[in-house]
Length: 168
Image 1 (spheres, one colour):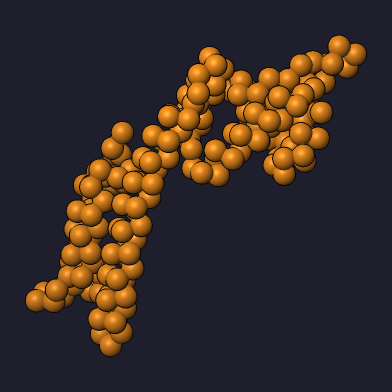
Image 2 (image 1 turned 120 degrees about the vertical axis):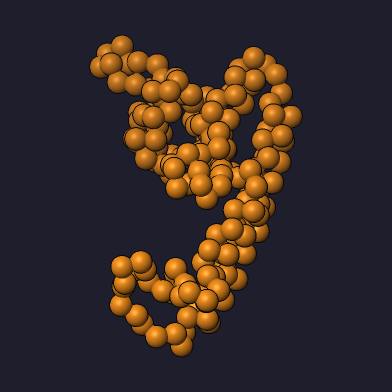
């Protein structure tokens, strides 16, 4: 199979096939007559695995480690289980944070529904977000709660987000 044929067989794009070829996850052989890359059944099976793993949110690095184990003849299943359990834990944290955010957004909408529009001042752009003096600042409280609940998630703390840092 050529690039486009492999892509069509797996319902993906030729660029995807080229990408995984470039990073050496799949290896074609070259047709000696025309130099075209030809992919066999093993490349198709391997790419199918890669695409399935990506649908489960496995990173390229995680897939690489799984492929290395498999290529050594070792069962990659323990690594796959460990990785998927980590993904589930992270997804749960993000889901809980999203639920909290949803409630805070609902609360903000309800609270702000009948508040008047106000022009910006020298010290405030939007009183709904920044809060009037004496008003409870719902957005500030919302941010603090979300950061507390995210813990060691991929987003880190509000200070890190503001600096552009990310927990690695």
